[in-house]
Image (cartoon, rainbow, N blue to C red; front, side, top):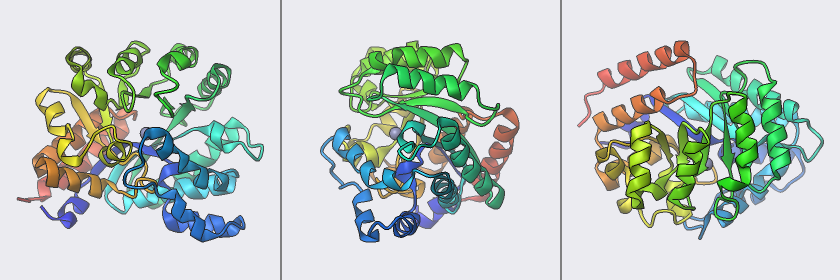
Length: 336
Ligand SMILES: [Zn+2]
């Protein structure tokens, strides 16, 4: 299977961080506008081996100063959705932590509105559907994160598809966000929680008991048969992000990537970029790596794409529309 063949396939991406995925040309444009040397934007790409999740996340300090106004946030959100559409992503869920974008005084609502506006505008200009996921950050206080989810619940319906918890899992496990997630649950917000990325499988268990229907990463369950069985029985989806997992040393190498193992175990999985720019990747690249190292076939990619869409935080009308595109795209392809 050639790269161009994969590029042409319709794709679904559920785990993509807005700030970590702003295309380089947009970052450079925003840097120039803010009086920051555009050469410094090279620091937005994490080393292939970042050592650990904490060091990987440090890369975001290059990007975040640029995303502190409504105008820049809208532009960035638009550019991420456009970039995804240009590689035939037909459905994208884009996530971000509003509390990271308030250095110049924007309110939570203003931040979310700006990202939403940029995202929506791109869905009108390109053949892609998209949804927004709001992340709480693990290192923020329970009070701030609880308040964040309260404000999300007050937004007009359909503006935010779900909530998430992201950040340094090793130092701030799920116990640290229990109250905030409890608030989200009370407000009936759909949720996916980063868990079992660089922490333990136990975090995946706690995320499920908190009501998470999907798990960001979750790769740690490969070494814990009990949690793996619970994930299978509950039909919870793992949002896998291969390149990112290798950069943070969650998984030692691509040939060890447990994609086939999870498929054999009947675990629902989806393939994602995590951070298109920070991880210097695309959906096409991620799938290509799995074809090369794990022997994924085109019909398996089709199956993973359908599974991802089944777990999307989208309404039925959008799901039906995207499923039609997926079916048409895979029907047309006779790829060996
Ligand atoms: Zn992530």
